[in-house]
Amino acid sequence: GENVEQHPSTLSVQEGDSAVIKCTYSDSASNYFPWYKQELGKGPQLIIDIRSNVGEKKDQRIAVTLNKTAKHFSLHITETQPEDSAVYFCAASMGAGGTSYGKLTFGQGTILTVHP
Amino acid sequence: DAGVTQSPTHLIKTRGQQVTLRCSPKSGHDTVSWYQQALGQGPQFIFQYYEEEERQRGNFPDRFSGHQFPNYSSELNVNALLLGDSALYLCASSLLARDTQYFGPGTRLTVL
Image (cartoon, rainbow over all chains, first blue to last red; front, side, top):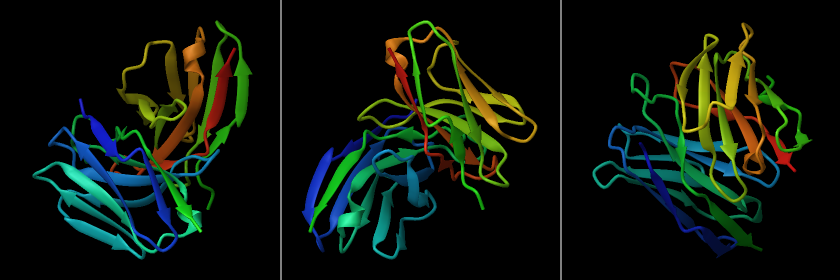
């Protein structure tokens, strides 16, 4: 089955700096890659996602890049703010039509701390 | 527009007991997936329901079972609780034809 590795496990930055979190996946059939932000005591919140027919996607201060050949994808947060502090998870799944469609496989998470 | 809701928020049980957790999907969604999140780890897929049928299942024992109702809401049942079942149980809803899953706030289960 799919395996997703996420690095680093913790990341500490100063307010205004950029933060980058990287994930690798094992199953070349995976074609959907969401990123979730989870605050203490809450469920994961979808912040951005990318599909395998796209190499990069941006939404204001957040961007995601995908390298299908190397099977890795990354989350980039620019101009970080203290409210960006949370646990971030990457995930991978097969798209519609795949045998495991709808099953998200998550990375281990990255604890991001943004210092004022 | 209400998002995904789950009940109860917290639950404390003892070993060997049974528990039922509930989930109402986001308005318009027809598919419900359940995940288990142990402390400090990423969510792990338990199973997914669509049209009141289990579509696929992760690596969880038969003690974990579920149900989906005609209004698309869902229940997760866990029998013969073990200490290791202590976790945050998350429900996610989606449309079958779409990838995107939206999570609820979760139910924190503690097994003593």
